[in-house]
Length: 209
Image 1 (cartoon, rainbow, N blue to C red):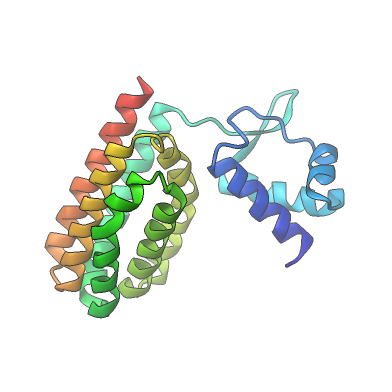
Image 2 (cartoon, rainbow, N blue to C red; image 1 turned 45 degrees about the horizontal axis):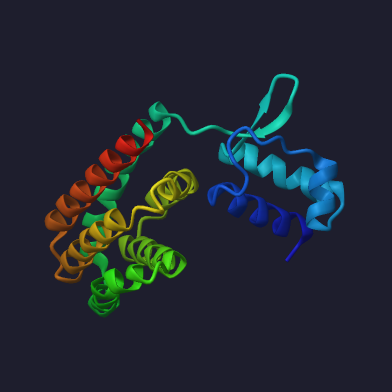
């Protein structure tokens, strides 16, 4: 992996996981020392993060990690509703049933997984769900649009990472989606997606008050 790609991946993950919090100043010299690369790969990585909307220039402070406001969250979910409901419809039409039947088994077991506070394995399952939905939908333009949104959604999702009850509810909601996709019922999959996103947004907004 190229040094710039490694720097980008590390910084992106640190921002999404809140190890680099909103407002954190990102100085090239300090980052190059921490990451063990020269300043050029760091500069390239920061340029990509600016394009992603995860980093921005702030007057007099240089580059900083962007904030996540309530307005940002609401607008992200408006876009997410439109994209993911259509993705669900397309995935139900183009799915391999076996893939989603296997995901259903994993989501059914997720509450037990979360009871052990195993967040990373659960988030890995959600990532595999996203990948399966993208592949089944077969629409590269829709998938590309979602991929620009997902880093921001992942940051927002981490806000509720300590709320085990909500994560268990979300696992049940994902189960309903994958069962509908496996059965080829696009409208049910879209409806279940709508319910999941609505509940997720309401939970996040309550926690941000």
